[in-house]
Image (cartoon, rainbow, N blue to C red):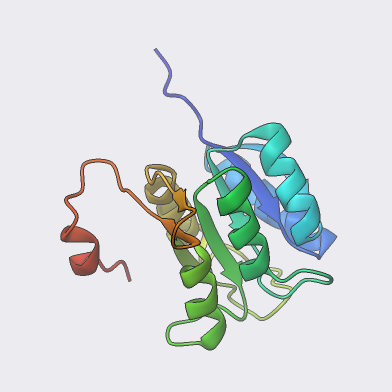
Length: 163
């Protein structure tokens, strides 16, 4: 019996990066079910395709990644891993994206357009796999996304830190 492949939507304004990420994830056993070039298209494709998890660039025309994450959490809560040159440990963009409901982040290895993803392929695939177990929910009362991780007690997320 084969294990179910995780279904991924890849979002980046660079066609080259979308293709590179899709190729990397496909080689790692993920099912890349779609690609989007901006935040608005990402929201539409999340609604239409229902991916298990999304990779999201931060800096895109029209609607940045954090704004798109916020709208995805309202429309169809789906785990999102930010994949951007702008989302790094301690960066304002990282806090903005995580505050909007993103589950985690991976920094692109060489800026906006990275030709060699081999340096971060393991980290990206690991974080996407973990993120796919999250069950984000949108709390209309607070206007915030709430993440529930499968098999994790409410106190454990504060203790969990992935390098």
